[in-house]
Image 1: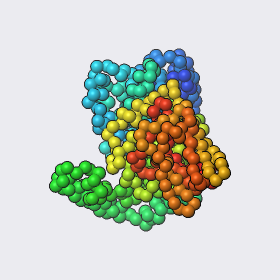
Image 2 (image 1 turned 90 degrees about the vertical axis):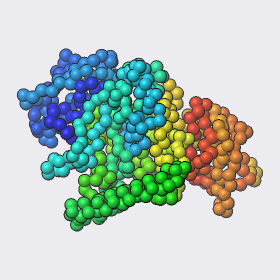
Image 3 (image 1 turned 90 degrees about the horizontal axis):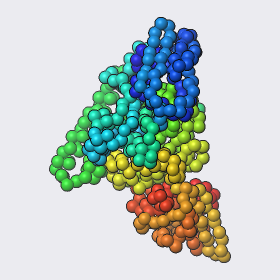
Image 4 (image 1 turned 180 degrees about the horizontal axis):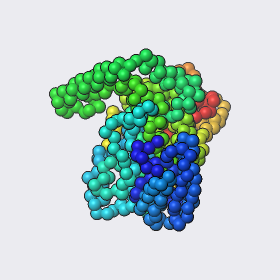
Length: 513
């Protein structure tokens, strides 16, 4: 999919960055069955567009970072992209917290000043245009005022629109000693369920997902006209407008009240909007309009930060998340693309214990799918603010892990042993990605017994032997958990690099995470 009329897909533009030391591809959509010639690095490559007009050429890896240009010719047309660089390119995906722009982050003024003085050179970004809908008959794109994007060499004038987490990740990579060009490709949109990024055929292939997402969507829109959709949307917008007015009025009358407290009293912003065929929150919607735009991209790693919008349907996330990772890898034709999976930080206002369930799924997926590493920020959330303004701690920790000088990700319990000593029991939790556990503050394990009794055990240094957590109990519990709640005030277990232990819940009978 492309928005322009060029031979190359939109992502291929002047000033772009390709991964160094990795074969890469270029391609696009033209008329079907047309010959295409690509000139690059004093060599020519020939191919032909298929019956759908798609074409691509695989080019050999480039080891240097030097600037080059590439020329594409087909059917008496030509397109040149210049100022091409080679370094490290990271794909950022998800919803609002990864989308959170640097201009809104609390350290932005300091960063802007540093950029002005040239402190962080050779950083780049490309924001995938947030296309909601493309009419299959007319080709009309929504929103109508959507602008084409370009590659940006980050400076004090344009840095505000890059992902804040993405920027701090690159900053940490630079500070780790990596000198080659660094780039992020931002493919995200706030308020999105994982289901909007997955192919419809893949959703339809899972009975539960088909019923919960596709069937519900099609049943909701069945028999409605565009006038009906517009009427429902207008009513929804009026509801949102009234909510915003009520919230502003309450805050004005109670100036010492926090926004989160006010929302708990007035109510949270109505969400989601009513289904309609051109709404980006529809199942598979952004798979068709945004993910498609990066199908020719080549990346060193992918960062996925999402799950907030699936907390109202957390029971489906164990099927959604693996399917999503498969979809993205399949779309960009890189089945082993390394993924850093961001575990949701603490936030108290998720329904039930759905935030904890999402984190448990993220842990499971990282443990079972190859080349997927968990990166936890369980200690970086705010109790009643789903969008913390300090993204520096998140981005810097992520960047240190991505740099690859230490562990690949977050420490987690990868094995539990149960030892019986007469009428007493010893639970031994072995922690991966850790040489030595330690306590940062008061911390508890929650013990659930078979008689429904629940108790908390306060941890001390006596419970640690290097990377093992050891608990002695008078009876075998049914379940043991750590920080398994939407928001915990007792996040205190860290490894020697001060990365927090992932929350967990373990059934002691099944001995399964």
